[in-house]
View 1 (cartoon, rainbow, N blue to C red):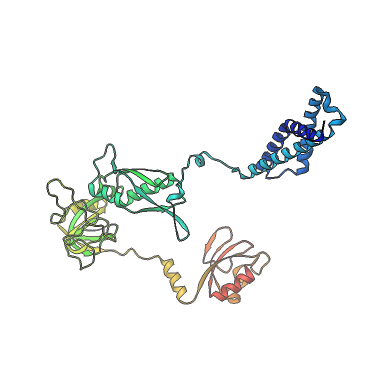
View 2: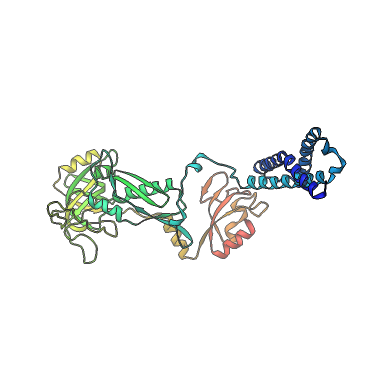
Amino acid sequence: MSLPIEIVFGIYLGVITGIVPALVAGTLGFVFKYVTDVTIPGLGVVVLSLAIAGINGGLLALNDETIRSSERAPAILTAIIVVLMISLYAHSQGDRLGASVPKRISLKQLRDRTLSTDVIELVGGRGRVSVEVTGEVNDMEGYPPLPAETRRAILDGDWTFPADLPLLELENRFTERLQTEFDLADVSVRIDEQARATVSAAPPTGALSKRVPAGKRAVSVSALVPTGIARGDVVRVISPDLDAEGTVLAARSSGKPEPGAGAPAKAAPVGGDDPDPDGDLVTDGGGESVAAPPAATAPTTTGGEGRLTLALDRSEAAALLRADRGRVLVLSRGTRREYELTALLRRTGKRFRKVSVAAGGPLDGHTIGEAEVREAYDVAVLAARHESWTIAPSGSQQLSAGDDLFVVGSRDALDRFAEVAA
């Protein structure tokens, strides 16, 4: 036969005998790359493929004597080249697949849904997504209907979140935000890949009772209420029979706010549940009431005569119930002394720094007094950790390599100390 026919026959023979070597080479390449992150050398692939192809070719030669003929040398050579090309290609594809397949695949990763890239906005180099509440805000089964103003506020709200969150986490974030802003009893949120949310919500129930700590009682008392009291403030109520301290749960005063303060004109409720009898929120016999715009800051009292609801112990609550009025003193919560210390040192040009004792340095194996840290480096050691933290360590504090120190001093002194000792 002519040479072109021999080459075509060799290609045919190479494809038939190269299927098994290609499968073996591709599988081994994938397994080695995925498990050990090692690529099989090309020479190893060639040797393995020729060995397997030789077995296949030998089996074919047993069935067809013409293959063993010396006149078939061009076809056999072409078949060998085809086998090697197929095997090397299969190995490279298996190696690439082994490098791209994730090493750890959990059921949680398979379950997580993500947002479509069409709804992601880039702001300041970071992605964000605006969730849109579609349809009506549904009521939760077993709860009273949601007020119309709350329903409208949820629909018209601006709900923006980071775009790198999976949808399950995004739903949890949206649920927590709705419960926090509207004090809802229960919320169910479902968000699809296009950032469209379906919301079901239940109105708050027992708003005051939920704020009473365990073991406390809520008691209201009439008093001259100072301006600016908010929920969570600690006050002292003085009556003829009692001097008690408690946390404010709700407050209302009758003072009028200054122009532009953003407070209600008639009264300033703080966390209370009673409506304002003189307010403007009225209906025309069936229409929905119009909610006042929310204040920009936390609601506070505007001063004047009013009532406070406090969380007190059982004995103090019983005594305060017998009092007609009380005098209210707002107590200071104090300040964090460590912040005051930090501000004081910064005003004098001092800085803090955490350093580690260097092995073989002037502090390794010595005490703070022996190393003369203050005299030699003009820094003071505020805390040291050898086995545990020691605040304001004495000069006998032993130091060794790897110990952590909190030191204070000028910026230049800290730099010199870090270069030499840490």
